[in-house]
Length: 115
Image (tube, rainbow, N blue to C red; front, side, top):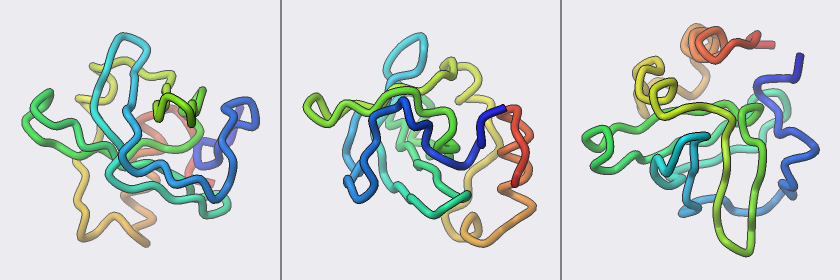
């Protein structure tokens, strides 16, 4: 199984590339834009601002779900459906950093391990 918290080598992500503002596409359509992105080894993720789609909700999506980064189009594709993203664990911008229990919950929800 792929590491849920690392960018897939086939995704064409180049470390150091700022992903903030990129559009995010689920397997079944547009879900929002990147509000925050990290590239910590074994702890990478993107935070997506879903805008009006789910009432301004932000969601944390592990980097391992990213299947393609298109720098020219400023677009990221993830291998998740809109429903999977909509039903993901509640994101709290104040507590998500360094919260192993939250990260574990997100990793389990998306089908991977926290390590």
